Amino acid sequence: MATKDSGVFTPYPQPNDRRWTRKLAAALVVVMAIGAVPSLALAETHTVEPGDTLSVIARDYGVSTADLAKANGISNLHLLRVGQSLEIPRSFHQVQSGDTLSEIAVAYGVSTSEVMALNGLDNANVIRVGQQIELPAGASAATGGTSTAAAPADPAARYASLPGRLMANPDRLSLIPSFEKWSQHYGVPTDLLMAVAYRESGWQQNVISPKGAIGVGQILPRTAEWLANDLIQIPELSPNVADDNIRMSARFLAWLVGYMGSVDAAVAGYYQGPTSVNNRGLYDDTKAYIDNINQIRSRFAAST
Image (cartoon, rainbow, N blue to C red; front, side, top):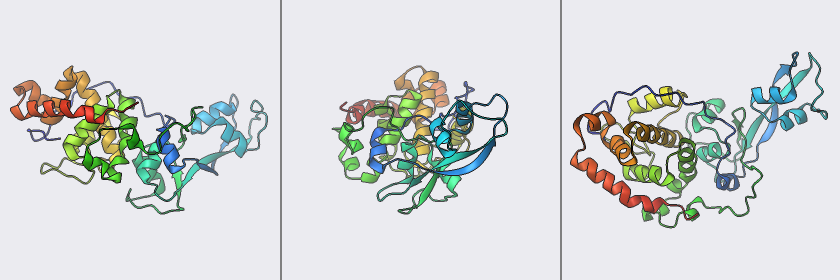
């Protein structure tokens, strides 16, 4: 973000987020695109204690009751015995041609950084076809009982007016599911999040500003640390990972709307810094920035 002031701003205490629910259904289009059907393997065990039920055990380990029953050959879901040892299944995704780690994470409703940490990956851009990617507990591909037949295979197909430089770059278009997921999760208009990110970086994760702002949303390191630790409460989130960067941008915009009181004021705070806006008013280039965001938002409106 092109803030005028070094140090960005002094964060204000806010009510803490609830931890991200890993079972949130991911975008159907991504599930289709990467064939997100996890395979199961056995991992840790659980010894049944008095009062345990299969559904409660499944919930505690972040797996489905059906998968837990299947892994242990249980036909009667209501029949467990104290002391019984249950194998807890874990999930994997086998990398297909064209998969990216961020798309896999989006498809299973988890963060890229979680997948990287679980699999000991140092580079989110390096995976190989056929590789088994272990998924965090509770990760599940979206079905929700909804037919995927009507969902377009290309996420950009829902957006008829995207700028030409995005349409010419499949890598940037692959970020659309992340924009949709995190904007919906934090209650931010998707077109607003997309427009701000386009104005900031052109949806490029490799962009670093002279002041050190990073990635798609141009998040400054200090801001990223505050967002990850205090607002989102997942310290391992990294502004260097595109999906995490977009998540931080969405959370920051949501916070700014609440703190600043309007969308225009939030956009101003994103660009200039909320403390500076409150103390000094809007700079001329901040006013121009707001006008530009309002003008280009229509380019990011989904057709349906």
